[in-house]
Amino acid sequence: MTGAESHKATVSLLERLVGFDTTSRLSNLALIEFIAAYLKEHGIEAELQKNADGDKANLIATIGPRVEGGVVLSGHTDVVPVEGQDWTSDPFTLTERDGRLYGRGAADMKGFIASALAHVPLFVKADLKTPIHLAFSYDEEIGCLGVQQMVQYLKPLLPRPKVVVVGEPTSMQVANAHKGQHVSRTRVIGREAHSSRPEDGVNAVAVAAELIGFITEMARKEREEGPRDDAFDPPYTSFNVGPIIGGSAFNIIPNVCEFDWEFRPLPATDSAALLKRYQDHIDTVVGPRIAAEHAGCHIENGRWAYLPPLKAEPGSDAEALVLALAEKNDTSVVAFGTEAGHFQGIDYPAVVCGPGSIAQAHKPDEYVELNQLAACDRFMTRLAETLAS
Ligand SMILES: [Zn+2]
Image (cartoon, rainbow, N blue to C red):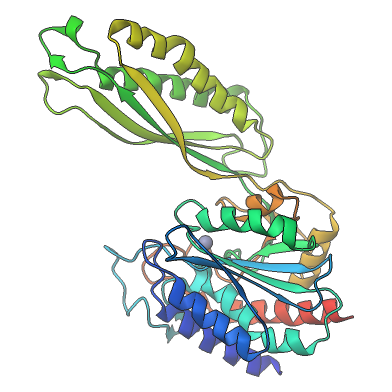
């Protein structure tokens, strides 16, 4: 397969992939079945792993011998919504303008998947000594749900790979680290009463405000006294309190208040200790106090989403291999979270490298440059050559 042929194949596969509306709230099965059928044409049997509802699936396939030391090409198949965005052309019809291919998912991250698939014929022909695994997930954009199921399945079954390449858009730079993300939801159950009779109620909004004050103080402490890593911007673990819902009228003591909050830990941050500090404050200070005021008043706090950080493993074989494939000398870090930390969590070395820029992801008129796809195609060709020799 010449460079021009593989490039053409990548673009035409990307056109097909973008044509499937795989916004996270929808099923991705049509796209997964398309990929499975395509692989079958090339003699590769894919395994599908469905979610509990049966309307979404991960796809896993191995090309070459099932031995250790392979390379996993990892991508998520879902995309973020287009609602409310002003697109110049139909987001689900790949459209070329000025050396760019526009479409939802073009950068994040169907371009990488298309390039990987376009090289399957080459991978099959290459007589690989170590395997190439394809690992495509669902529901990355709404909390990495698919990959969490996938890694549990892979760990006992897949011979340990040398590296997982997570093809999120890095402009084909090799990123070896990113922060994590812990999203929690706190719900305060207070007691309703007429606002003129504060002794009769427990104000859930006021209690929530007190807890948010505690989170704000944790944030200050991390910023001023916590670990620092100047590779990241900002170089500390940051916090945010997002939506808050509670209360119905100024003269009613609100009985429920709920808020979502998150923090983005540096790889060196002890996330469990931060969560414990907050939970301890609930369990030993605020919770007992409101329960004593009125029976039944309490606070629930649960994890809503979790993305482990990706820790750099500088100088590792995994990193060296991907740097060579991408023809780069240096690694970088990315500011966004990826599935890579979940792979690292099962002791698979992982790095992030894919075509397109995160600056275009999640936006109207998302695009990937043709020369980015070409660079990814060269990466795939070198991968086949490297694992064959
Ligand atoms: Zn993505």
